[in-house]
Length: 254
Ligand code: MN
Image 1 (tube, rainbow, N blue to C red):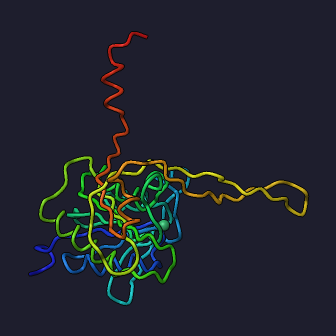
Image 2: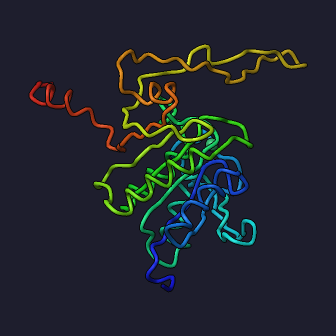
Image 3: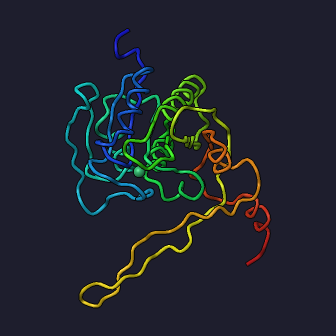
């Protein structure tokens, strides 16, 4: 089988090209497809769906372990996927995967996540897309289970595709995989968000340090699954319309 018959998987992330997680996801993708890594050239966590409009983007070639070649982009995760689609890839990818992120992207983290946004950008561009995160922040986290879960979900999506407009968001605890549960996004938020300090010039400054708060008391959310030791898999959408409220309000005269 030459490369033209093989599917192509675009691998991106938000932790940058040097993160162990992106190498792990490239290894799993390589079992199914030709792999192209196009990702930010530096740490870009929590940039959400930001794009770069006031400075040019640059890309440079790199290889990981002499095996996986790619392009490091001087922009955000969403920039990387846009540039891959529009300029850098020689053919259309069959799948876009983002991760493996070092840190959970369950609950409200979905909204702040650059990892999820790289996958969402893939969805916007019309490609089936998956975001993969491990709940352990550390660089040397045990990604065995995350790789295992990613393998299962990649296989499913390559075989079955995804409906237009939907991204899969996969979160996995560190260590061996216990199983994967379909789950919805937990209602959650951050509290006590800032620690205030004073600098040597007597001016105030603030560090973002928030504590995660779970507001969701109903079963079946992603945080529940993770707390039970399972991976969570959530279909998410970038269409933010509240359809129930729209239906309720659309006949209200203003
Ligand atoms: Mn990250």
